[in-house]
Image (cartoon, rainbow, N blue to C red; front, side, top):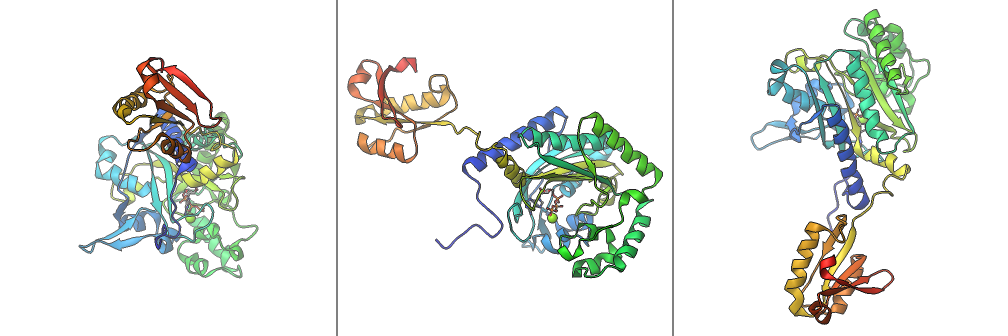
Length: 414
Ligand code: ATP
Ligand code: MG
């Protein structure tokens, strides 16, 4: 065949599809307990929404967005992340005015034109939560522990929570100056970093190019104003209270410009170089920046594919039980209708009260041998055979497809 899934995308099936559903289900359960409600936003938005919120001099906006024009010449973009869309929806539905507080979550596809590698794709899935209307450090701590809870619910326990504070409009200008000074004397900066140095020096801390990795880089924590320092201390105090282990990483920044104060990243030791499985932080100016009433906010997103890679390493995917496959076959064509009715009943009621089953058949017009061959091909574990003599006595045959043994059972006992 000449067609393949586009580079950086992949089909999800089998255990991975089960794992993804279960991850979403577990996350939703935990979100609900924390009072978060689901929001589904469009997969594409006005491109300017992302440019404006994520920032002109970020990798996402400069290189990674899928931007296209529709037939009326509107400039649209496939969403590269969820926070901007949620903020847009929050403002569009006047929630910033009617109830300037809210807890929301989303699950869905994101698109970034990146160099594909293990854990880095062009279409990937994020599960995220956003808490609006609270500037309390308790909201930061809740979001961090929430992200961690979702991961531990899958048995992913070898994780490191890195936190930092990016300061506020008052203290960040000083830190930017310090960074510009520091990097101005650095050698071998990549082209992006050279270009961004004047405009957005924080970006240099997040550069993935090897020649841009420096030691003794200035750390934000040394330049925080007293309010930001206090705030960061309370976040840490609350994380300790919640038994959430973390380390302060003074050079941690995020790849998006809207963050202020607390930022965090959760990394896994188990999945190789793309080790960031969840990330987030506070973004108190975004809603106002997008034209809404000033509303503090904090949130996070986890990368579902990377989380599943980490889950695989702790055996989570192995433990997923596929439902037992049961086939209904007919020895004589005249039993087709009876077998069909039985099959439908079994779908509804289960087999021997077990509802973790999937039911196949019956198929008419084929010999019993070819029905059984087909059942083997699709890895059926039990076949229920409707045969005339047994059926007249209210019975069916149950064939164990693995050891080929066969028993007789009364139909109304199933
Ligand atoms: P990275 O530093 O790995 O590029 P990022 O800072 O761009 O990550 P965010 O924008 O904060 O990532 O997104 C949150 C999470 O989404 C990441 O921690 C990661 O798990 C996941 N993620 C981001 N980009 C991709 C991608 N291209 N493919 C798969 N997962 C991704
Ligand atoms: Mg990135």
